[in-house]
Image 1 (cartoon, rainbow, N blue to C red):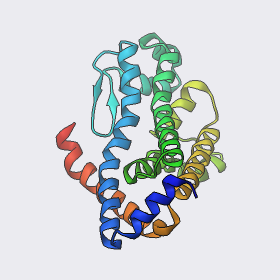
Image 2: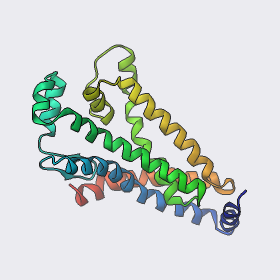
Image 3: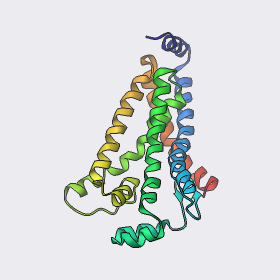
Image 4: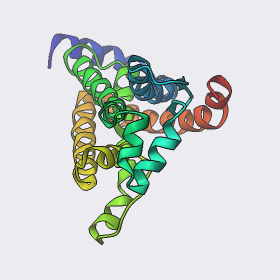
Length: 221
Protein backbone atom coordinates (compact mmCIF):
# COMPACT_ATOMS: atom_id res chain seq x y z
CA UNK A 1 0.00 0.00 0.00
CA UNK A 2 1.33 3.45 -0.96
CA UNK A 3 1.90 6.20 1.59
CA UNK A 4 -1.04 8.18 0.18
CA UNK A 5 -3.41 5.21 0.25
CA UNK A 6 -2.29 4.37 3.78
CA UNK A 7 -2.98 7.91 4.94
CA UNK A 8 -6.44 7.89 3.34
CA UNK A 9 -7.24 4.51 4.86
CA UNK A 10 -6.26 5.73 8.32
CA UNK A 11 -8.41 8.82 7.90
CA UNK A 12 -11.38 6.73 6.74
CA UNK A 13 -11.12 4.51 9.81
CA UNK A 14 -11.81 7.60 11.89
CA UNK A 15 -14.89 8.47 9.82
CA UNK A 16 -18.24 6.95 10.74
CA UNK A 17 -19.78 4.67 8.08
CA UNK A 18 -22.85 6.91 7.80
CA UNK A 19 -20.77 10.04 7.22
CA UNK A 20 -18.61 8.20 4.71
CA UNK A 21 -21.68 7.00 2.82
CA UNK A 22 -23.17 10.50 2.80
CA UNK A 23 -19.92 11.88 1.40
CA UNK A 24 -20.05 9.44 -1.50
CA UNK A 25 -23.75 10.08 -2.07
CA UNK A 26 -23.19 13.83 -2.27
CA UNK A 27 -20.22 13.40 -4.61
CA UNK A 28 -22.26 11.08 -6.84
CA UNK A 29 -25.19 13.49 -7.08
CA UNK A 30 -22.82 16.21 -8.28
CA UNK A 31 -21.05 13.87 -10.71
CA UNK A 32 -24.21 13.20 -12.74
CA UNK A 33 -24.56 16.64 -14.38
CA UNK A 34 -20.80 16.85 -14.88
CA UNK A 35 -20.73 13.50 -16.69
CA UNK A 36 -23.67 14.38 -18.93
CA UNK A 37 -22.54 17.91 -19.77
CA UNK A 38 -18.91 16.95 -20.49
CA UNK A 39 -20.18 14.51 -23.11
CA UNK A 40 -22.52 17.08 -24.66
CA UNK A 41 -19.86 19.76 -24.48
CA UNK A 42 -17.69 17.57 -26.70
CA UNK A 43 -20.36 17.76 -29.40
CA UNK A 44 -20.97 21.45 -28.76
CA UNK A 45 -17.33 22.51 -29.16
CA UNK A 46 -17.02 20.78 -32.52
CA UNK A 47 -20.34 22.21 -33.71
CA UNK A 48 -19.01 25.67 -32.89
CA UNK A 49 -15.60 24.97 -34.40
CA UNK A 50 -17.20 23.86 -37.68
CA UNK A 51 -19.53 26.84 -37.71
CA UNK A 52 -22.78 24.90 -37.52
CA UNK A 53 -25.66 27.37 -37.44
CA UNK A 54 -27.96 27.50 -34.42
CA UNK A 55 -25.66 25.56 -32.13
CA UNK A 56 -27.07 25.20 -28.62
CA UNK A 57 -26.18 23.29 -25.47
CA UNK A 58 -29.05 21.70 -23.54
CA UNK A 59 -29.12 19.74 -20.30
CA UNK A 60 -28.94 16.38 -22.06
CA UNK A 61 -28.14 17.20 -25.67
CA UNK A 62 -26.32 19.54 -28.00
CA UNK A 63 -28.06 20.63 -31.19
CA UNK A 64 -27.75 22.73 -34.34
CA UNK A 65 -30.31 24.07 -36.79
CA UNK A 66 -29.96 21.49 -39.57
CA UNK A 67 -29.55 18.48 -37.27
CA UNK A 68 -33.00 16.93 -37.81
CA UNK A 69 -32.90 17.58 -41.54
CA UNK A 70 -29.47 16.02 -41.97
CA UNK A 71 -30.30 12.88 -40.02
CA UNK A 72 -33.63 12.43 -41.78
CA UNK A 73 -31.82 12.51 -45.12
CA UNK A 74 -29.15 10.09 -43.88
CA UNK A 75 -31.73 7.62 -42.59
CA UNK A 76 -33.54 7.78 -45.94
CA UNK A 77 -30.28 6.87 -47.62
CA UNK A 78 -30.01 10.22 -49.41
CA UNK A 79 -26.40 10.85 -48.41
CA UNK A 80 -25.80 13.24 -51.31
CA UNK A 81 -28.52 15.61 -50.12
CA UNK A 82 -27.29 15.36 -46.52
CA UNK A 83 -23.73 16.12 -47.62
CA UNK A 84 -24.98 19.10 -49.59
CA UNK A 85 -26.38 20.54 -46.36
CA UNK A 86 -23.32 19.74 -44.22
CA UNK A 87 -20.24 17.71 -45.25
CA UNK A 88 -20.66 14.24 -43.79
CA UNK A 89 -17.11 14.12 -42.47
CA UNK A 90 -17.97 17.10 -40.27
CA UNK A 91 -21.12 15.36 -39.08
CA UNK A 92 -19.08 12.25 -38.26
CA UNK A 93 -16.40 14.15 -36.36
CA UNK A 94 -19.00 16.10 -34.39
CA UNK A 95 -20.85 12.88 -33.55
CA UNK A 96 -17.69 11.13 -32.42
CA UNK A 97 -16.58 14.13 -30.34
CA UNK A 98 -19.08 13.31 -27.61
CA UNK A 99 -17.83 9.72 -27.39
CA UNK A 100 -14.25 10.93 -27.25
CA UNK A 101 -15.13 13.40 -24.49
CA UNK A 102 -16.71 10.58 -22.48
CA UNK A 103 -13.66 8.33 -22.87
CA UNK A 104 -11.22 11.13 -22.02
CA UNK A 105 -13.24 12.02 -18.91
CA UNK A 106 -13.30 8.41 -17.68
CA UNK A 107 -9.59 7.85 -18.35
CA UNK A 108 -8.64 11.13 -16.68
CA UNK A 109 -10.66 10.16 -13.61
CA UNK A 110 -9.02 6.75 -13.48
CA UNK A 111 -5.55 8.24 -13.77
CA UNK A 112 -6.25 10.74 -11.00
CA UNK A 113 -7.89 8.15 -8.73
CA UNK A 114 -5.24 5.50 -9.31
CA UNK A 115 -2.17 7.69 -9.27
CA UNK A 116 -3.15 10.49 -6.94
CA UNK A 117 -6.04 10.09 -4.53
CA UNK A 118 -9.36 8.21 -4.69
CA UNK A 119 -11.44 11.35 -4.29
CA UNK A 120 -15.16 10.40 -4.13
CA UNK A 121 -16.17 12.90 -6.83
CA UNK A 122 -13.43 11.79 -9.22
CA UNK A 123 -14.13 8.09 -8.70
CA UNK A 124 -17.87 8.58 -9.13
CA UNK A 125 -17.44 10.67 -12.28
CA UNK A 126 -15.20 7.93 -13.65
CA UNK A 127 -17.90 5.38 -12.94
CA UNK A 128 -20.74 7.45 -14.36
CA UNK A 129 -19.19 8.93 -17.52
CA UNK A 130 -19.17 5.67 -19.54
CA UNK A 131 -22.63 4.57 -18.32
CA UNK A 132 -24.02 5.95 -21.58
CA UNK A 133 -22.48 2.97 -23.40
CA UNK A 134 -25.13 0.77 -21.77
CA UNK A 135 -27.68 2.32 -24.13
CA UNK A 136 -26.44 0.03 -26.89
CA UNK A 137 -27.37 -3.21 -25.11
CA UNK A 138 -31.03 -3.35 -26.29
CA UNK A 139 -29.82 -2.96 -29.88
CA UNK A 140 -27.54 -6.02 -29.83
CA UNK A 141 -30.29 -8.68 -30.14
CA UNK A 142 -31.84 -6.72 -33.01
CA UNK A 143 -28.52 -6.58 -34.86
CA UNK A 144 -27.81 -10.26 -34.25
CA UNK A 145 -31.23 -11.09 -35.68
CA UNK A 146 -30.23 -9.32 -38.87
CA UNK A 147 -32.82 -6.58 -38.56
CA UNK A 148 -32.25 -2.92 -39.39
CA UNK A 149 -31.79 -0.45 -36.57
CA UNK A 150 -32.63 3.24 -36.42
CA UNK A 151 -31.47 4.04 -32.91
CA UNK A 152 -30.81 7.63 -31.93
CA UNK A 153 -27.54 6.96 -30.13
CA UNK A 154 -24.19 8.46 -31.07
CA UNK A 155 -22.97 4.99 -32.02
CA UNK A 156 -25.87 4.49 -34.44
CA UNK A 157 -25.30 7.91 -35.97
CA UNK A 158 -21.57 7.31 -36.31
CA UNK A 159 -22.19 3.94 -37.93
CA UNK A 160 -24.60 5.53 -40.43
CA UNK A 161 -22.08 8.18 -41.44
CA UNK A 162 -18.85 6.17 -41.42
CA UNK A 163 -20.00 2.69 -42.36
CA UNK A 164 -18.41 1.18 -39.26
CA UNK A 165 -20.61 -1.74 -38.12
CA UNK A 166 -22.85 -0.64 -35.28
CA UNK A 167 -22.21 -3.88 -33.41
CA UNK A 168 -18.48 -3.09 -33.40
CA UNK A 169 -19.07 0.37 -31.95
CA UNK A 170 -21.46 -0.91 -29.28
CA UNK A 171 -19.09 -3.74 -28.30
CA UNK A 172 -16.14 -1.36 -28.07
CA UNK A 173 -18.12 0.96 -25.81
CA UNK A 174 -19.21 -1.87 -23.51
CA UNK A 175 -15.67 -3.21 -23.29
CA UNK A 176 -14.40 0.25 -22.41
CA UNK A 177 -17.09 0.61 -19.74
CA UNK A 178 -16.25 -2.77 -18.18
CA UNK A 179 -12.53 -1.99 -18.00
CA UNK A 180 -13.10 1.46 -16.51
CA UNK A 181 -15.47 0.09 -13.90
CA UNK A 182 -12.95 -2.58 -12.88
CA UNK A 183 -10.15 -0.05 -12.60
CA UNK A 184 -12.26 2.47 -10.71
CA UNK A 185 -13.53 -0.19 -8.31
CA UNK A 186 -9.98 -1.20 -7.52
CA UNK A 187 -9.03 2.42 -6.86
CA UNK A 188 -11.37 2.60 -3.85
CA UNK A 189 -9.47 1.68 -0.65
CA UNK A 190 -10.45 -1.79 0.54
CA UNK A 191 -11.17 -0.63 4.09
CA UNK A 192 -14.37 1.11 3.00
CA UNK A 193 -14.91 -0.18 -0.52
CA UNK A 194 -18.43 -1.56 -0.09
CA UNK A 195 -19.72 1.35 1.97
CA UNK A 196 -18.35 3.74 -0.63
CA UNK A 197 -19.79 1.72 -3.49
CA UNK A 198 -23.21 1.68 -1.83
CA UNK A 199 -23.10 5.45 -1.44
CA UNK A 200 -21.91 5.81 -5.02
CA UNK A 201 -24.78 3.79 -6.49
CA UNK A 202 -27.37 5.48 -4.27
CA UNK A 203 -26.02 8.92 -5.12
CA UNK A 204 -26.01 8.26 -8.86
CA UNK A 205 -29.64 7.12 -8.73
CA UNK A 206 -30.61 10.23 -6.75
CA UNK A 207 -28.52 12.49 -8.95
CA UNK A 208 -30.09 11.02 -12.08
CA UNK A 209 -33.59 11.80 -10.83
CA UNK A 210 -32.72 15.28 -9.58
CA UNK A 211 -30.84 16.32 -12.70
CA UNK A 212 -32.99 14.85 -15.46
CA UNK A 213 -36.38 15.48 -13.88
CA UNK A 214 -35.85 18.67 -11.91
CA UNK A 215 -32.63 20.67 -12.24
CA UNK A 216 -31.50 20.02 -15.82
CA UNK A 217 -34.68 21.04 -17.68
CA UNK A 218 -34.77 24.32 -15.74
CA UNK A 219 -31.06 25.04 -15.94
CA UNK A 220 -30.48 24.27 -19.64
CA UNK A 221 -33.83 23.67 -21.38
